[in-house]
Image 1 (tube, rainbow, N blue to C red):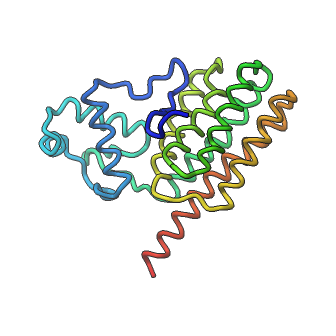
Image 2: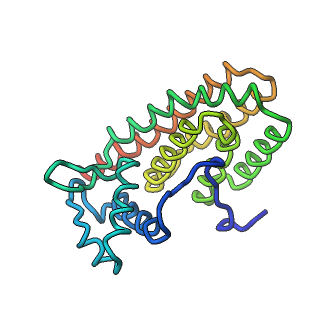
Length: 236
């Protein structure tokens, strides 16, 4: 088995995960991390020249980064007020995962009807690694889990849908890094992955689509529950 830090999930083929210059992509990662970790506060104004000075770069890469973050929903642009940090709140997370509940069943149904023996073997291989890791390394789990779902969506003919799935999953992955998996959620992930593989093997497209809908909703609700618990702890 590869070292924990060696595994990195890749986006579906044909999906550009960043779409910027190398410097713009680097700034995008840094600014997004600052937003997620709260170093840039909700509704804080993002001044291009200030960010360029802070990161020791020119203004063009900063503008690239802010446009990428706008596309993901982390940054909003207001008329005559410029760019500001979008609050990473429960409404934001709900909106993102509810879109997944709508589109992922359609992607999954198509996959089941097109899946090959090699696809099934890859799902089983990744699931084996997920269970071997058993949430000991949460970063590795996230990468393996993303790779598992990418197997199902990477060849879908609707590249817009596949790219939307990838971008929204990356947003939720970034937000969820602040929280631990509950024991109940861990068990649900393992169980639902196994059931999904069984549906794929059986060619049961409708059952697989229904399962993935519950799987995505369960993931989103888990993040919301963790956010509520954290907010309640802070308020108390």
